[in-house]
Image (cartoon, rainbow, N blue to C red; front, side):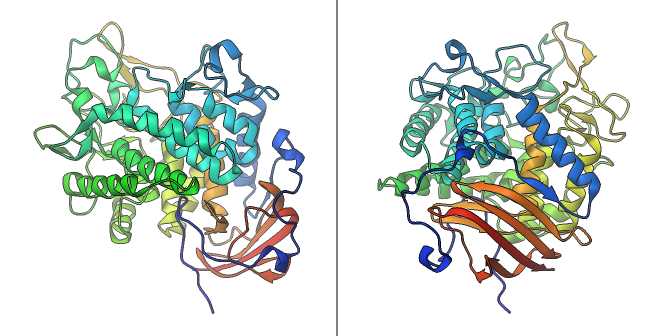
Length: 496
C-alpha cells in the first residue's frame, strides 16, 4: 500500500502521468467559460450542517460581496478586467470604498481565485497602485498580497509577470521595516490593526484612538504572524521568479534567514510567542493567526507543528484571536481583538490543523464555524454576535459592533472545505491533493471544481489524512497537469 506525504499549499507537486495517458487535450486548448463566471462547486457529504454552511458561504462571497469595482476608485493601476468589472469587497456592513489590502488579498487567497479567476484577479489588482501594492498606513498588510498573488498564478496560470513585478517592488519598499539586529521585520500583527489586540505596552490609558499605530512603540514590535507572512512572501517571489526563468536564490536565502530568526527569537520551547520587543522581551500571548501561519507557511517544523496543535487553547466556540484576556478585559467585556473569535483567524487555524494531520481539530474548526456563521466576530464563550470592547476616540473602552456578511469569514470557511477537507495543493506543475476527512463525514464529494481549463468531480472515501489511492477516470494519478482540459472524475481513498 502506497501512502503519499501531505503537501503544503506552495510546495511543488511530484511527477504524474502524462496527458496522453489520461486522454486529455494538449496545451493551448480553448479556455472554458467558467473564467467569465460559471456554475459553483456543489458539496455533498454526511454532515448537513457543514453542507448548509458551505452554501451560505458561497452566497456571501459570490452573491452578496462580489460587486462592481468603480474604475476611478479600484482600477488606479489599469489592471482590472472589464467585464466582468467586479471584485470581492470586505462586507456589506462597511461604507464604500473598501480598498483594503488585507481583505482583498485574503479573500482571493481563500477562495475567489479558484471560484472565478477574473474576479479573484480583480480583487487583488484593486489594491495596486503603479506596479506596487498601495502604500497606506497599514504597511504591514502588504506582504500577504504577495502570497495571494502567487497562489492566484498557481491556480489560474495568469498574471505571473505582473504579480512578480508588483511583489518585488513591494518587498523592496518594506525593507525600511527590517530590524537587522533581530533579523525580523517590525510592525503590528496580521489581524490586529485595533489596539484591543495588544497588552500594555503598547496600549496605555489616555490615548484617544483605536488604531494601533497611534500608540508609541507599536510600530517597532516584531510580531509572529507578520514575520511568518514575510517568510511566505519571500518563498512566493522565489517561486514566481523561477517560473519566469529568473534568479530566485536571493529570495530563498532571505526566507531561510527569516525562518531562523523567527525560531531563535519567538519559539518558547513548545509554542511561539506573540511578539518580540526591540530589547528582546517576548510576549507569551497566544496569537492564533501567527501559529496558523507558522504551520501553513513552513516556518514550524513537523515537531513544532505537533506541539503547537497539541497546546493551542480553544474557547468554547472556537479559536480566539489572542488569549488570555489582557487585564483591561474579561469574560464579561472581551476585547475586540483579544479573547474573541474572528472566523478569518479561526479558519486559518483550521487549515493549519489539517496540514498538521489533526483530523479531530480540523473537524472541530469546521463545525464550530458552521454553527457560528459569517459575521465579523463572535463572543468566544457564548457564540453570540459580539464586536467586543476597545478604546475609542474618547479614550474609553466601548462596546463595538460586529459587522454582517463579512466576506473573509465566509471565504475562510470555503478555504477549510477546499484546502482542508479536499486538500487542494496548487503547485507550478499541477494540482495535488492532501485531504482531511473526519470519521463519519464520508463519502464526501465536490462536483464541478474548476481548475484552469478543466473541471473535476472529486469524491473522498474512508477517513483520515493518509491517501492510499487516487484515481482520475479510473486511472492511478498523483497530480493533475495544469494543461488538463475537459471534465473528469477523481476518487481518493483515505485512512487514519
